[in-house]
Image (cartoon, rainbow, N blue to C red; front, side):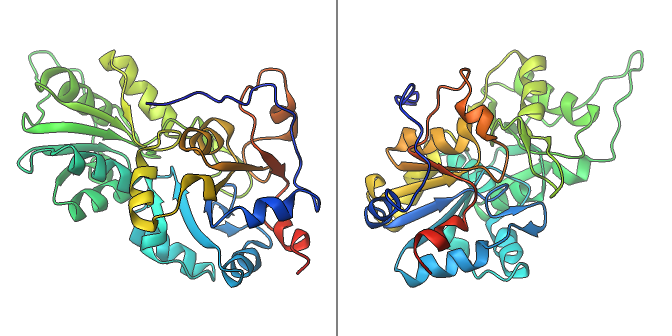
Length: 308
């Protein structure tokens, strides 16, 4: 069961030489979001590589928890490597992986298919979990036309529709996903996440998966099962994998409504970085009721705070 932020009204505390040692000593694992924290698009944020190396040298466990479903864990490991950072697949928890694992832990029948509005990452993770994914990039150039006496056909064996970030979303995909959810008995509607925007490139924000999810919500009049942050579904797998108590973890992210709320829902310490979506004015504004334990400008601030 999700809980709402219980720190509304608490004073905002910038990370400083005074409070950082206490935080650092109380944490065994740092959980990092990726977009806006580690990189922006395909550009690494300054100082990140050195910071991660420093944390590993101090014996800290590093885990990367991303809502971006366009890549599989394998592809994310390749991206890290291309940016000069060594990260194993086991250290990556993506919402594409979470979608596949949700089906697996809930005994989704292997003979049922999954229609995907999203990228290759979801298709790949479904395949690794033993499921057949339809749609995704293959439907990116398909069109749907309004014609008299012409029925838009869809696969009646689809038992779940997974919606994630899709830069090639189109009317065909929307109609296919809508028909599956509305007409196939018991069809699940799963959202990888509901991020409004994200740093898909280094210079600006772009519409996030929340836009695609909202379109299907509108056409089906259904609300999805959300498996990415701030849902703690991924945390259950993380805990089984690393056997570290949540109170000994710190979630580091750039979004209040996903990263920080995810950490709070799970009982982790939370650190907001201002290198991505959230600005200082938004954090301090009266409309915000999600208060991280600490905030700082960017991940590489750790270097100075550790005196390295």
